[in-house]
Image (cartoon, rainbow, N blue to C red; front, side, top):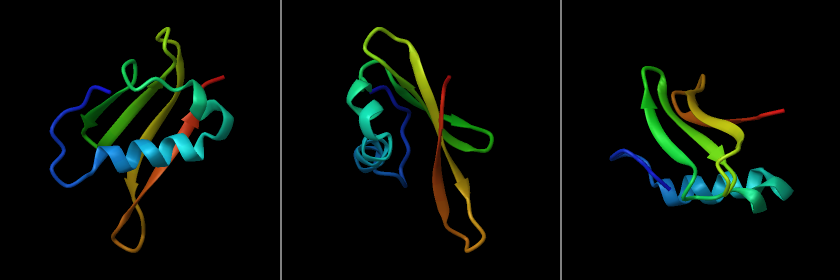
Length: 76
């Protein structure tokens, strides 16, 4: 899994959460093909299979309580 240096986030914990939330598709995720990256809005992750096909995008957004939540959008 490729990543930038994100000081306040444990990417291993986030990756485990992504796999769990993706259910059956989580088995197809490849950490070597997927990557975390920083955007103007926060952090995103491209979720890819071993062959590089995009399965979905995961991103972090702020919630109303001042915390944040992770959203997973699956590709069609």
